[in-house]
Length: 89
Image 1 (cartoon, rainbow, N blue to C red):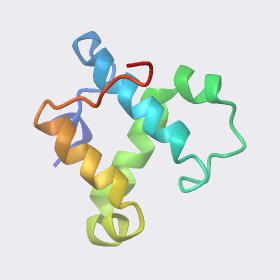
Image 2: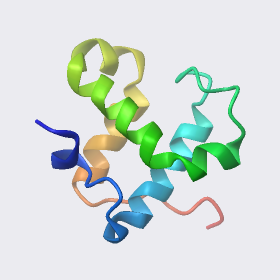
Image 3: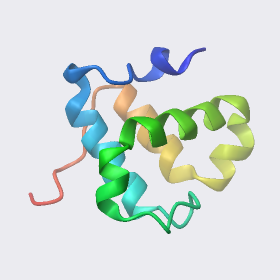
């Protein structure tokens, strides 16, 4: 399975999904070992972060799910087209 089979990277139709992933990456940036990045940098490079995280997820799913259950849950939810409640809502 390719990353684009999960989330089409860079597709404007998936802006809401990218926004949600950016919020998740920011909320869990210590877990992802990207705590040294400013939130604005994560937002600006969310496609790059998404590509790296999803590639890692695909390469070792079981271990990844055990370490990052919040991301596995989010991936499954987003694949069903279910977005979370906006952070300001």
